[in-house]
Length: 299
Picture: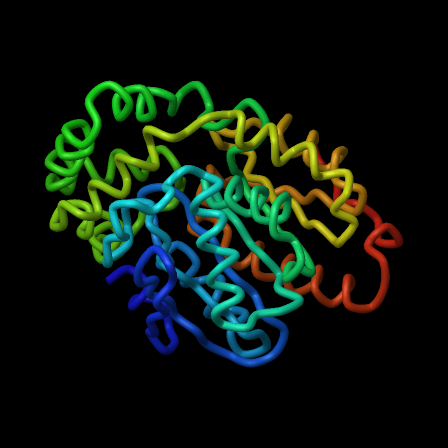
């Protein structure tokens, strides 16, 4: 399974839509890590290893193609539906005052969570992610349209091509500057390759992609007064720095920091930088309102 490569205890929780596997490690303030499409909890392994001794880190494998247990066929697999799974997970694990962290599609999921179910979220951390009109961004929209036209057949073809290690490496090179080791590439791709139920879940999510969900979520940003940290990679061909600047402007209590040299997968490219900023952010936001903290430079 994906999250088994993240240090900690592998656990399961039965939700209305099916089983979610997750890793939990550490003690202290709770951090909940949300990955995106074609990834799983492995994405956060280096960040968690830096933070796990001082924080309670909860790292689920969400049903976005890298998970190991297929969801029930009737589950809502739109962005709003997956956000509901995250909210239900927080409730089932009795997580409160959570720092919610999202990358890539996971960032859009976090935006939907704070829009519709913000009561358990104390802070928000977003790295390069879908937002506003960019769900999906233009360069990734073929994944949505192919799934809409061809459904599971498109995802079956995608899984077949990912059997080739060269294809896996080329795909993930688009989202990470650093070379990702073979074991991690396998952990990302193997569930999709091996399980038709996983492919069905991903096909349903891709078909349901629509910017109306992210635009709806954005209308709530002005009401979210809890601290927000935005950490943005500057070498990302998909998610423009303009998205980061707009997010910073729309949240009342937000700070923006650059992750120089990173593409979309900031937890892969700059895990030490991200972990350090998260720890600093939690210390500052616990001690007083974030507005009193100077914003980071953005070039």
